Image (tube, rainbow, N blue to C red):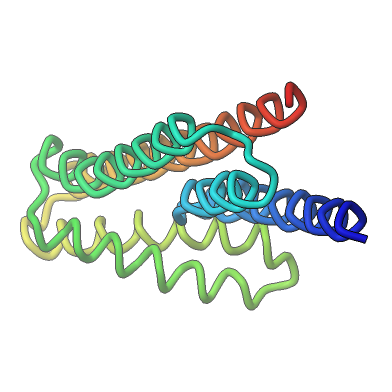
Length: 175
């Protein structure tokens, strides 16, 4: 009976971990922090089946933390590097969130949410910079920086979540 229970707990942990990893990759596509869900999957499988090791779990936590730091700094850096104000950076974040909400209401929720986030951040940065300086070319320059920065962070988060998931699966397969 004990072996059957342990086997059931192990399989349940694998299923929940798989769902966490898929969800983590999925939300990373929307520039949310999916890496932490992959960390949760690694901790869950460590506690339930003894793998991966705590060193690997610690490395996953480190990667997730670095991704968060980079995400926080990248947006501000991109706006400032192109001559935008700190307020423009905040407006781009707000515009991105508003765009996600509006985009998710359309006929294509997943694609609409992503396009809404990108468009909302771009438009908000453009409007703020245009109101500040009244120059179309400058406003477009800063807004393009927001768009490029958002895309880079999106690729980084998705890549980190996907890479961590692959390492977790390979580690579990080797057990």
